[in-house]
Image 1 (cartoon, rainbow, N blue to C red):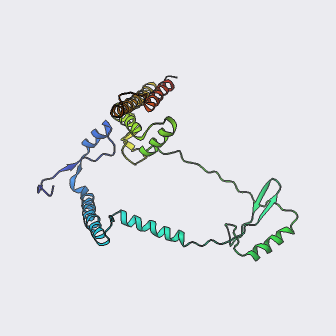
Image 2 (cartoon, rainbow, N blue to C red):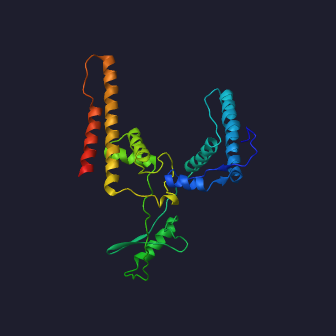
Amino acid sequence: MELIRWKKPFKRLWISSQTDKAIRDGFKALKPGPAYDPLYRSAVCRAEADWLIGLNTTRALTCKHQAQLAAGRVQTPTLSILMEREQQIRGFQSKDYWTPRAGLGSFQAVWRGKQRPVGRIFDQAAAGALLERLGKVRSAKVAQLRTSEKSEPHPLAYDLTELQRDANKRYGFTAKQTSNVLQRLYEQHKLVTYPRTDSRYLTSDMVSTPRPARGAERAAVCSACTSAAQDQAARYKTDRRRQQGVRSPCNYPDRRAAAGLERSRRMSASCTT
């Protein structure tokens, strides 16, 4: 807007997902352009900082030390934090400590003092005196029992990296293969959210998104996985034949292609059962 010297009012489309409903709602509620000027200024600030720090400082360090050194707006502060933590780890000095314990039949009790809630005693003489005092006790009674309920939150939704890792463990898919399956489920079948984002949360506008039938959803996932496995196997086979054609006129069976086809058959079999 500044480059073309635009002075007239304008509006922005602001959406957090790419579902059909979210896009329609976004166009119905366009936001005034000046409302996002702070975001624009912060982006300009980051871009100029990348030029001033990233390019200029990198060139200066490289020329001065005659080595390929790099500096960056985010990289250099992050590296500083890591080095400070590394220095703290290297400068740490371990100390011996004692934790008095008492066997009480079916369970074992750990001593905890008011001044030492963790139960660690760094003075050997104090630990010995406490152990001697406890050794004279012949019986003990539980004075108080506290129980508490703890809840474990359910796992978050997959991001691309976690899904690629699990798909490789369970089905032997490569990262590219998993990305292709996910892209098909997003573009063709509309079963997943935008895959190339690090966010693991769903926006509120997805609550009312219609969900396909269970059978149709399962069939779409199976079709995308099978197609991706077959495409990957065919690509491996073509590349292998091309390489072998350069080395020798003989064509040898491609084990990776066979493995990819076998994975696609297993996927099909597991989807139909």
